[in-house]
Length: 287
Image 1 (cartoon, rainbow, N blue to C red):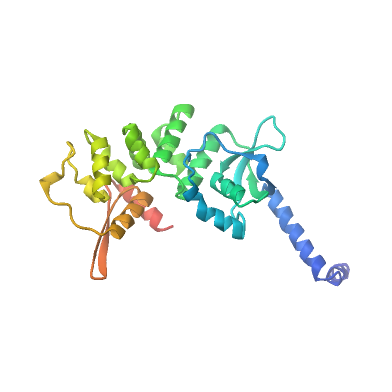
Image 2: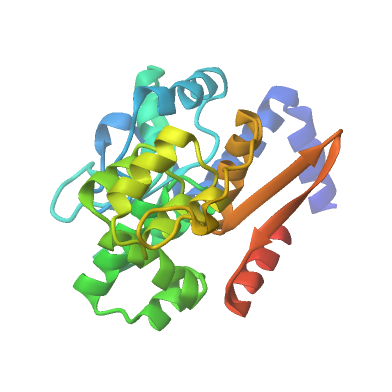
């Protein structure tokens, strides 16, 4: 009887009160999981964030989305030691910047108490999963974990959830000349292009040739050690849309991708050099 009476009393309070109860319960669940809303002014960027490039063009689409729908996915933050109402962003700096541009005063966050090492791990994992990092930013994040926290490549691969060959191949990008690294950071060279340059005697000259001739990753891989094309053959004709799609897929997979398209049909080829790379491709395709 007591339960029936309580239920009748609750229903008798009206729909508005019932909705208020549901919202309060949802808010309590969010608080119990560390999620809440805080002013954007309380947040500060993480100097260790592996992602350093934030261009206006990069933020335009996200800002429009935030202006229309708000920040859908909470930012991951941690309290700043010794300061009240101050939180350092672990992951989600793009969303924070877009929220500021959109004129929002508050954003949803999930608060975590984590160490510097855990913060950098989480930043890399979140950005890589969202494809927010380019290959060089990813490499710099890996190198910082190795230099500052003593990771081996094997331990880093396990912590980040990547294969060891992927870690090794990505770190090799840091050996490229600074000018080539700039091309990677600003998106003019893909990860696949960059990996093709690592073993060349003059990667800067080869990089400039790739840009001038609009080479695909496969074309770049055909460049000989001295910077000339293997076999001296003529670069095959390929339209700009196909080359752009090859670049996009190569960036996502970190491997050479070739698309052959004729008369409405064709094939996509993904080149791998180890079983670990094949496993990584299979894992990505499975979602």
